[in-house]
Image: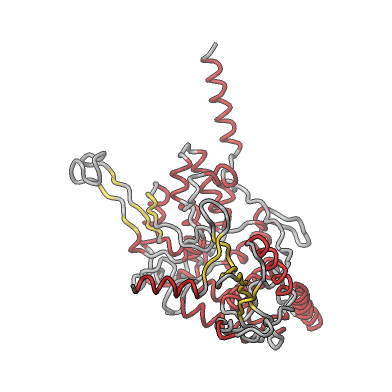
Amino acid sequence: MKAIGARKQARKGWQKVFDAHKPPRRVRGLWRRGEEIYANLNASNGNTYFYPLHMDTVPQAVVARQALKSLQAEDKLLPPSGLDTSNTKKPVPKAPASLALAEAVAGYQKSRDTLKCKDEATCAREDSGLKLWVEKFGTIAFADVKSGTLTDFAEWRMECVEEINEKLEEEGSTRKPAHLSGRTIDLNVLALNHVRDWAIEKRHLPEDMPVWKWKKMAGAPAPDELLTPEQMDELCNQALLDPETLKLLDPRYVHLQAANAASGQYFHDYMRLLQHSGARENETTKQQWPNVTWSRIANHDGDGGPDFKKGDRIPGKLFFPGKFAKAGGGKPAEDRWVTLHQDLDEHLQAMYARRDPSSDWMFPKRRGAKGHTLRFHRQLERVKRELREKNCEPGDEKFYWFDRATFQWFRHYFISHAVMAGIDFKTIAHWVSHRDGGVLIGKLYGHHDERQMQQMSAKMTAHLLSRR
């Protein structure tokens, strides 16, 4: 009896509407109460009502509902007159008023730092740009930021740089002129886009807010070049003090951080490590000595693996934590072990012999500070400047290979020589932390020098002669 009563009660209440399809399909947005069909819609006052459609069939009710939806889109849908609103749903809360840009930036930074969803370097880069956004447009409503606002910001930044350079010129300063790259402005705009996404998620901005239009200012990067071994030696050795000056250093203290930094040994070792490992520049600055497994001699058959016999040399390995290497999309790469070839092994042995024993970092900070060296860009610029002074006449404005050199060239050098050595792409991809299995290596990174071309030509000649 209770079940029958429940069914009678259901017939008196709101029921879903189905079409004539077999099997029947639910018609969303339509409800039936008794013999009447209703449309459930939000009115312009923010409340939700059941609107009687006064139609006999479901197709007619669908058409009538669409007419009401058109009024709703124009914000002209009024509550149904003379209708008991006791059955209306709770009003949908409206989105809070838009924040000022400075408030939105502060809210995003607090959320980002609390969730710890980005590494420290990324946060610092974002914050440097967001600080400028707040300085220029911090008081305007964030909802009022348009595509034109991005252009205004870029123009303002360029004007600031021009003002700085004009002031330096007026003062007769020998300081290097200020420079602002298009990529830097692109990163500033990207940071504000992250704030925009956060504001939409928190309902400070409507979900259908128009996307900002921004044409990237960064140009295509210059193609990387394959250095000759002689050029590589010249670039790395320029980091060191000349031999006569090195003799002035007390050999008892040559291992200390200050001596290594003063002599340029740290930077020389850093460039050689990039050359021999093909690692990324940032993950290399974070390398530590506990990540090295040194080469050794097998004590018995099977020591180090089934392929090793007693007395064989078991190659060492260098561990690269994936959290220090971005593998695309800002995500950490996989951990990897790189087997030490002879040059890499000998270089690490030499570095270890002159290390600072008070630190596990391969490139510790100077002046007793804890942690590792963050970057070597200034040292690279110094080396390039010294090579120009050494090889160019005053007033020579020609752009030479050392003027174009970047740390990425060391990665290209390693990968190109690995390709020329005949190492399979999949192994190289693992060594340098590429997730595509070697596709990018064949497409972009692999260079061949003239000697390799000559060797391949001789190989082709020998093959053709063998078929005659």
